[in-house]
Amino acid sequence: MSREGVDHALRTLRAERDRISASLLDLDGHEGSRLLEGARLTGETWRRWDDAKTRMTSLWALFDAYQRVLETARELRDRNPRPDAATLVELSGMLSGLSVELPDGEIPLQDRTLLGPHERRVTLEEAVALMSEAYTFVAGEIAAADAAWTALLLPLEKAEECWRGTARLAHSLDGTRHPELDRVGRELTALGRLIRTDPLSLVRNGAPDTTRLDRVRTILTSLGDELAGVARMRDDYEGLVARVTASIEEIEATERRAHEAHRTALSKIESPNLPAPSHGLGRGLRDRLAALERLREAGRWVEMAGRFAELERATDDALERARGDLRLSAGLLDRRGELRGRLEAYRAKAARLGVVEDEHLTELYGEARDVLWTAPCDLRRATTVLAEFQRALRACESETGTRR
Image (cartoon, rainbow, N blue to C red; front, side, top):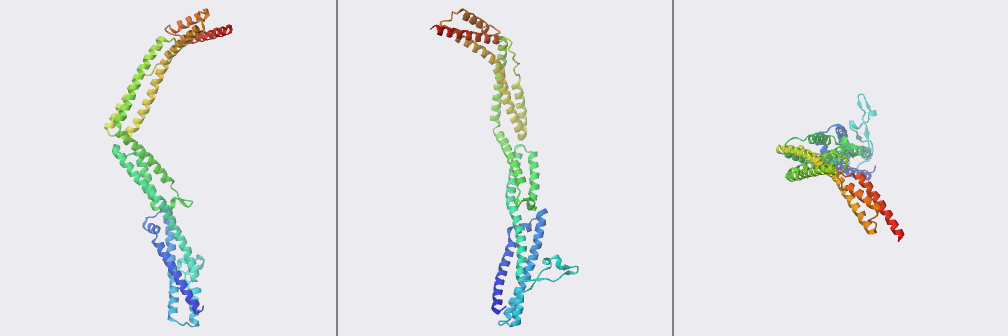
């Protein structure tokens, strides 16, 4: 190399050395690198970071060897302002020849012997290539861990805060431990330990897998909503009890009306085939409400909330059952009333047509009226006779129209 070539190469290589040095310092100071250094790593993350640290150590050693060659070349050039041919040959060997001695860790296995590694040297350019390869590996491992922590730590902290808030709410409700909340807490603790010490074990196909964390957060949200509902029930307990009590009173009143309608139907309707209406539904519900009051006095709100919800469902079912009993018995009496109304309507129509004195109609009317106004009333017979009266009336109406 000429003197000008040597000087140009030195300027270029020293600028490159400065960029490499800055990159290595940035890598050492990266937040992900500091997190990895400060964490008590386990599992996959520990193994990969251990490999990365080994490569980083070798990278710095290779950089030191690379830098020594440059400094030696610079010092030689500074001592010889007008270098002779021998000096130029020596400088050329440093800058473009096999001048960088590889650290032991960088010597491939095939270049080693039982007595130790053979000395191996590479050019400055080859040293940069080796450093670039090591840098890419280390940076990739740091970036992977940093990305995993970035994706997992914040959701984890939110889940932990959610658990603490839910636990405080549960304790305020009954002062005891909530079994499901305790179970989720243990699972969250184990998951938190894994995320903080081995985040790379949760990476799937290049992306952090948040499935377990999402499931825990979903359960916590559900528990929080449930306990918030318990708190609302506690705060509005008197109003809730008043509404349930009113429903029980309506059940009891409906039961009484159903029994009255049942007795009336048995006396007024022939062979009604009515099952006996329910009895004592309201009394049973009052007993359950009294049992809940004892739970309230003991401050066992979480247990009480579930039982209160069951009581509300039982109250709704009982009210519907009582109303069904009433409809069943009253329906027969309503049916009798309907048939009576239809008979009188047909009678009025016969009068308008001028056939009210028709012998056959008069006979059918009298039979239907006897059946419908006699207790017990045979509804099936009344329905049949009324249908015959209607057919006869239609025949008379048709005959009258033909004559006109």
